[in-house]
Image 1 (cartoon, rainbow, N blue to C red):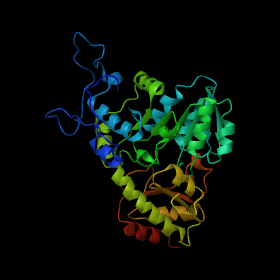
Image 2 (image 1 turned 180 degrees about the vertical axis):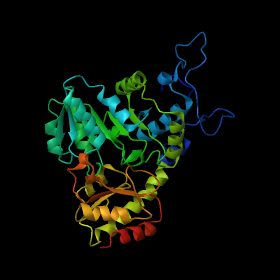
Image 3 (image 1 turned 90 degrees about the vertical axis):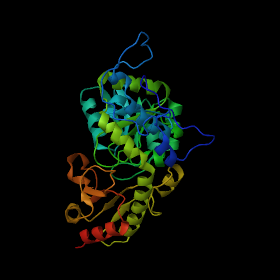
Image 4 (image 1 turned 90 degrees about the horizontal axis):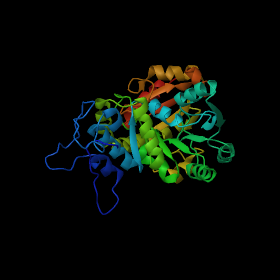
Length: 380
């Protein structure tokens, strides 16, 4: 980060496990320093005669709290992280890099907020949106001709589809098309798009990184020129996170590998049981051998993740199931320690999704307790 009081990453003779990085990164190693970075409340800094390389104003230079979080996330993702006030603020920072008339290739099924912002920009004549089935590698590569930006989301929201990231990102590199990968569902524990060739990785920190359904934040991870441009954009537009939010996000990140591992194991087991339930018409989870993206997930992810979707007969059946759960929470958003589920087709912006599709963010509860609750909710 530009300016700020420095934190030093843990350095060893070998690469550290993500479990270790999540705990050890972003801490001040100096003598008698506080073990955890404090909540830094302040907007400006006392100046000296030599101020060129010292922090001046927190909107531009950040704080020790921001820097600790950004260091830890950057090390997990393999780049330099920039914290934003929300995931959509991070999206905006990327799209603001585009010139008027830019062509953006975007998945037909992806996060609704991104599609809405792109549609709004297209209506104002700022961009041309080129939708594509991101699971079809040939179609994505063909759509890159003359494009200004490739926007990807893998696994996708809410259908849990996977893009062949190594193949598509390699093609975008050859064609000189910058690429962004929304890796919110995978987290930096399960997937590293920068290593596969992406220019920018997006995270809704609100979700699994924060992990406790108590904050709004976003983050971008990049390197080199992209990092510098995005950092400058954050300062220029003021899309900065609050001190408490960053503190909570770093606290959540400390347990991210443990939570993702436990939730992923739960998701795998629930997917298996849902697959055999007579009321369920389809389970969308790459950990199942029957899933069309199983091999793709094995090739490019470190695990299958905590997100799954399943289809019931129709919207009424899905609404009944969501209304009946008692332990599982009927709520939007995702990524907390608690399991949540909702029918996505009820939103006009998700009308293209199957009416009976329920998106589930699996938490860290006892899996048998979760299954008992789901079984009761799925009864005729």
